[in-house]
Length: 236
Image (cartoon, rainbow, N blue to C red; front, side, top):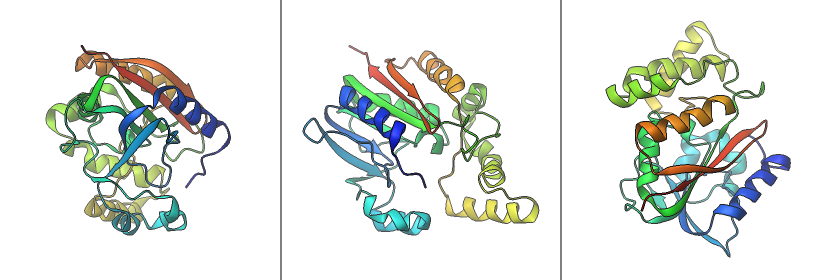
């Protein structure tokens, strides 16, 4: 658990002040909702479980339970099937994309629900930080994402869980195998993917070209904790 303060809070507040206006959604906020000005933006919170079920699934968040927003919409944030096309002025996904088994499909859905000129604000953990849970892990390769998108992410699932228990959990051998099996059975939301600034920005460009996403990057930041990017929907 990380308290959002200092440079991270300053970067977040500056980006929200510039780009988060109107009515939109934040996906997977948990205990670290992105800071928005309530006089400028109305946010509805989206998560796959209600608050009490989230606390059962993530007992490590119990000390910060008061900070968890009760979701307004119970929905799989990767698919957003209940969110109408072209309906949102903004979409915030902070420390969510790395939890998605198929980030390419997720980006397509994020783009789908945005209005023209709407803003997509993404933030992900900075794997370059030696304190990152994923530091030292093999960075996500775009060809790997294309394969998972075309064949299905199930092909990579077991390996991703193994990486997670190895790097984040610091486990080995039979202990790692038991934890891997437990988390897979729970469908626990691990970091399936990881990036640094030097790989995340190219990933976004490749995704926009491959899937013809009507997006362009309009701002970005990097600090030890996270990488933040704002993309604007450019379609007519």
